[in-house]
Length: 481
Length: 95
Image 1: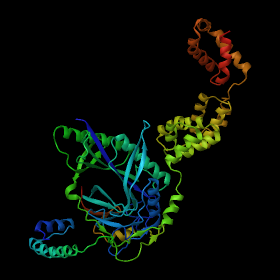
Image 2: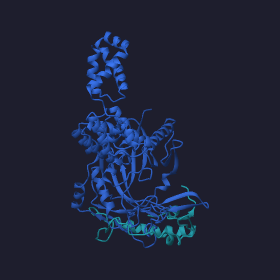
Image 3: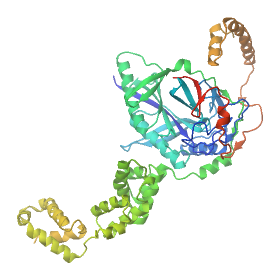
């Protein structure tokens, strides 16, 4: 049978506030256990929450960025369940009146198609603490540093139809929250986590199949792999005439499979009710409008501007604007080198290659955007050719100095003296009489290919320093005799 | 509306309360009478009335995003029956 995949995603983005959602404790990652806690985070009797202004502003920013209705009156609710890392016995969240209502995102896929993903809502909630199940005298250790850390839970409509679409959507949310500066986007540290709701239905059927929820997937690659493996699992069951059990599952990257965590039926009774400790949040229109007016340029807007302002392709613009750090790096390099195309190619080519090799982000690059711009300007003014520039770049990466220092120290300056180049070419022609004869005996359209051989020999003779732009016409002249 | 004893046991379980059979029998009646009252209230026409989330006519006060609390771990841990390496210890839970 032909199956259609239906996916909806819940993304938890940790908001980049200094203090917690409801207390004045720090939110710093990696602190000693239980040192970032207060009476409120520990759920001590009588402790009252006070809501963080900045978390509210960040949530409204996000709402604007996904074209959503802003909840002018929003209400905190208690989600009741028992777990030791939730000392209050409830998570303060939002239910009927979230801060961000329905919106949407247009997600561009690799093949250039654009698909619209509806956003049901985004609500503010507090995180729980952490349970450590390693052996503590046969007991579980509880660290409440993360307790009451602000989260924005972004819930999508079940509009996603493939693993690729899911990853493109998550990447887009990631890029929006990091552009806005409301989340550091560090998935390895859990600053952004994703729950995947997935079901299958026969193609053409309107009604949704029974879904499973894969909890806490924490990298783009794992999201894709978890989806593929869950599709396969569900398909096997359905094709054998079985039924899907609605349940929560966990993705195990080592085995590349999902396994059952708990069945939802009896766990799902959260008995939400409005939190009596927190009053409704009522926003003024001017507050909401001011935030909208102060939004930074967002990834899609930036991509569009790159296309128009720098005449880059849609694909290149998309890649370069995917992160704010990369976009800024590119724009500086482009400005310094005065050649945007060259800068674009280098940022996506050499720079990305080196970053990937060392598995670091662009803002950790040992070659700054300015330094790259200067290197590229040496290609622009014919001091060196592109091939030599790659060697210089490698030296710069290793900290050997600026482009000019390296070019100078290693004597890499291009030979631009036409007399010297002509002598070099003559030398190559004299040394390869057989090839010259063959070249002259060939049809003109075949000669184009054969000239590459001579070009290579000239470059070798000049140790890569001959300016290709000058070599070509002289080589043609001398060969055609 | 009348609750069955198993409903009462379920509610008790969600609240992690242990009830004797006798208690459950008693709560079955008292909780049912609360629900009867709610049922009676439901006959009121609430068309066009916004649900009330808080009876106070006030809005939430906001706090500046500033770290105001210092580490008081030792004091907090001293309240707990068992601790180790800065962690609270609880009976083993594996979901």
